[in-house]
Length: 357
Ligand SMILES: NC(=O)c1ccc[n+]([C@@H]2O[C@H](COP(=O)([O-])OP(=O)(O)OC[C@H]3O[C@@H](n4cnc5c(N)ncnc54)[C@H](O)[C@@H]3O)[C@@H](O)[C@H]2O)c1
Image 1 (cartoon, helix red, strand yellow):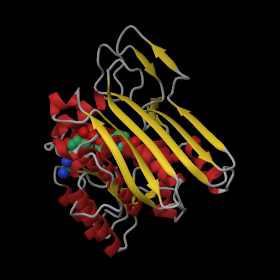
Image 2 (tube, helix red, strand yellow; image 1 turned 180 degrees about the vertical axis):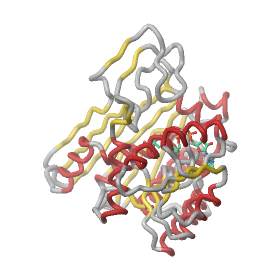
Image 3 (cartoon, rainbow, N blue to C red; image 1 turned 120 degrees about the vertical axis):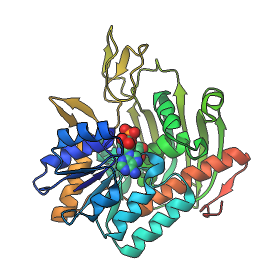
Image 4 (cartoon, rainbow, N blue to C red; image 1 turned 90 degrees about the vertical axis):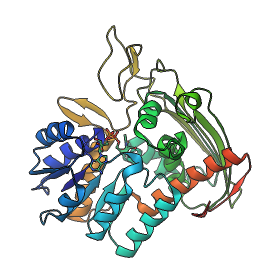
């Protein structure tokens, strides 16, 4: 197993992989030496390097996890594809549409099994919703709505890490999770047009960034998906990361899902060092709102653990799984880019968006 990028996610996935019975050799590529040392010790790495190409040349490597920063997935993906490895890639597939197209073409040409970390698909609530929609409990779905609220810590972390703020947006980086769930539920439908508007009063002056985007995706059969995300809420907003509300309306039923995590509220007198950079003003937490899961008894518990183990079962035992394919991930990047473009032009944008756009 090759782990490329030993940040928060590389560590979580590496720890799960290290315990899986099918993994008997594990290598890590991480550019930051201190971080590499720390992660290598936690996962018991057999090989550590700063250079992912050196790792991918190792004969022991038969699968790869790519968990580099959002805008740095492309080169490691292409190198792993060249070796024909099964790959688990972090979302988004790329941050530019032209790169996402290039990556998808390479994956499809090679025929390699590449899946993308849309981790929420591994939570029971979204699986239960998927099953009800799939088996027709709601009739024909006509309207979907999602509201995603995040405090601004993830946005600050992303804008600080990116060298080009124009490739980072709340839709591309974080809105993509809610969008993937909705599009997964609507997988039989074809999206034809998007319309969106963005605001930038907080992150614009700080980073040239975007605070939030509200939009609509229209489908060929008349169905509409109404979505919004803000990742510029004050840091005191109690969700560590994501708080989401979703409604799915059909001709014969409706399903609403409160995923705001208001059911477990922690209030403390000293900040807790979990998730993104803890801010001393964050003393109340909606527990469970960190999408990968929570650390308990020294291990990650939650959807990223299941997603990683199931991927290892998929590639070692051939077990079918609900991982997002590279094609679906490219579609999500295309839709989020189309929403951003529509907001920028203040015009509806027809779909699919072509790479030149
Ligand atoms: N699926 C989920 O629920 C979920 C949750 C959080 C983050 N993510 C995604 O995971 C990815 C990583 O996020 P993170 O929070 O772990 O970020 P991070 O900044 O903690 O980790 C990224 C790591 O990659 C390393 N890196 C960058 N380029 C490299 C290269 N060429 N070779 C080797 N190492 C390299 C960096 O030094 C850093 O340590 C992002 O795409 C992010 O969107 C997914």
